[in-house]
Length: 282
Length: 308
Image (tube, rainbow over all chains, first blue to last red):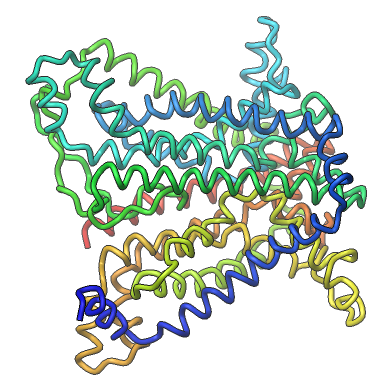
């Protein structure tokens, strides 16, 4: 008997395999898989020409471009500042470190509608920050810049929480070895530390991006929602749905869903890459 | 100061809080309990100051100030006005509906999350990592799309629409639709909190209990459950916070009937669009408080789990 067979035999000693896996698959199908399949089924009912016409209309193209473009920029900003936040939280001791560590999770826990109105009133011309920015000629609320601010807010925890455990787990030996061999601190960080946390950084970036692309609640209040200027793709889906233009809503949703599947695939490949690099066990 | 060994708290609950992110395997979590920040890791002082300064400024600007703004706006017309806004019948109806919808959704996801975590950690089978990816899927789907798929299934124009109308069953624009959309959005939370911990704990405890003659269910309630109770509690709290705060998905399926199918986030939207800012922030402050309580609970539960 091979080792794998012994392991498998031993694992199945625990009862309930059939019922728990069956229940999981059934529930997953009912809540997630069948509803998502319905969306794709609806999309196939459209003729290819109609689908292309919907997707390539100026308003849809602009909304998709805005959602994907601003999400990329927001995720990139979170990548840089998220790394600095992680570095400060893991490597340094400073007053309030534990408090700031806990605060990072607020965008996860705060409902998006609450974040949306909070950011809007903050950056509106009468708000705390809007009042300060108005004399400089910077308008945040009701412009694409406002969308960007909201997307940075919702994506912030993803980079931090993905990179933090990896940086904490990084053994001191590598940096000590580099220092012993005469590398400067910056060289050590650039050549030793950054490559080690690169998969986690990219995963956090992808997660922040995926979340930002689909974000709705925190954006619609601050966006201004001007078609062709500050109208995001999820909002356009809602508008088409309210106009009973189901085909349009479905087609836009299908494009976004395929995009999020691709991001999910990329994240999984990143995971596998990082597991391969650190040698199986991780 | 830098040659003082620094004891970092050992992380027992998974770190990615929102449940989102790669599942950490046992070897990552069972690492050395202490990490020593050695001389080789000491960064130059200007770099330390700059990084801490930027990090704090970033967190304050993007998180602390917006959060404080919620409470500042809510109490901008005094405590009296705050409570008057909350006592509004529509606000009370929204709070009631939110509590009911969240209670049902969390209960469903609790049961199925535990079952899924059990199936995924106590057995070996082909396609397991694919299954974990699919369970995570709702995280990467836009909430608007989560609502849309149920409209396409159960709406008047949906696949099951004619059938539902024939039997006068209302799902969209009613409580069942709100619950379905909420369950979809919060689907992975409980399972996500449990899977890393249960995987790391292995199956030995259960095997011992079974070999001593305990039944499968008894083994679960007496052995497995006590081992994961803090992670489970946190998963439920997080699931609840997200269920009560869900906006996009619920907005698509609810129909926005004031006092009937408006949850708290939807009520906030209506008030805000009617320029009743103070009242909107009063309701919002309740949800912000819920978020803060959830985070405090997380910190406390991490401490409990570390001590166990």
